[in-house]
Image 1 (cartoon, one colour):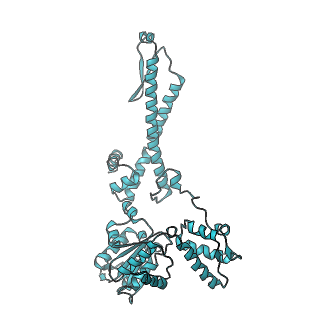
Image 2 (tube, rainbow, N blue to C red; image 1 turned 90 degrees about the horizontal axis):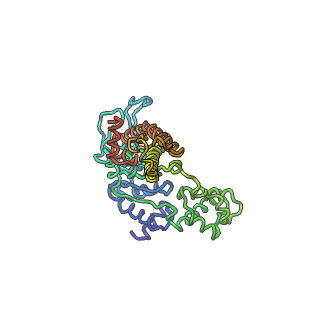
Image 3 (cartoon, rainbow, N blue to C red; image 1 turned 90 degrees about the vertical axis):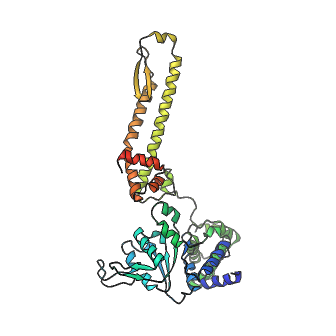
Length: 414
């Protein structure tokens, strides 16, 4: 499409900005609209993904049909199947009447599934059936029903990672992702941040009947260079705060900085313990298990290092013994570990330092062995989390599949 045609679409749907990636996303949405292909819109929270399903619906043959937007993350897991597919009277406690469900209501139209990555696995299976055959069954019914809907989905979750962790079905991902549309974050849109600020400032000036706030040049540069973790939504909220609170309608960088949260000041808990940040933990207990699992590996490595030092000391001590030593009675060999014997001669007392090293080594061995149960529990939790899929569990534990199989046999977790 031409830039003039895209500009008309932007005006109609209130989209502000001239970023090339944003313009490309609008163009793709318009091009795919006349088809019935499924579309997956991805982007960070607050970038404005909700405008694109409306563009697709309004430029499609279904524009006179129903358009229903559903926030999948806001519906409790126990009722989401009923909300989406409907239920029969008496299907569960509280089902005092029959419900049609969103897929029934949107027949002939478009349904927008926002935060689709939050859907529970059983609901994902139902959704896959709708995508493949247009069929669904109400909760509490055995009758198959048909629906003719266009599905547009959106998510700020990394679905590829969710698939590897067993939280999202791979077959559903490919069905939804027939046509991908990526919305850029505000920090990558440059001057668009200032254009959005100016539009929001004008809107709030009209809403609250006051002069619009304006930015000085240094404030403008600060606005453009800020990372905006909350994207357009955060920019809008901050613009409203400044519009209401500041009596001086000219905002400089010093004033604006007071409204911007400091960047990179908060460290996530996993990072403090050296746990990979791209992991997803369902509870604090899982974080603790991962930390202890890593500690066990560190202790084992430390034990090996102590053994190596002991071996080197033994070799050095042996080379330093005078020739007269060998004429004395036979030595007694006292094993410290199966692989590291220490030679102690009756007439030569071992140094105090070597005694301490031997005791420390035994403490490390004891501590390492006491963590076996933690390792066993960590492996068991990982297998449960990934529904017995050993490949995914091994990846989550950051060990090879072969090592995981060996550990499963060792701990009797078959």
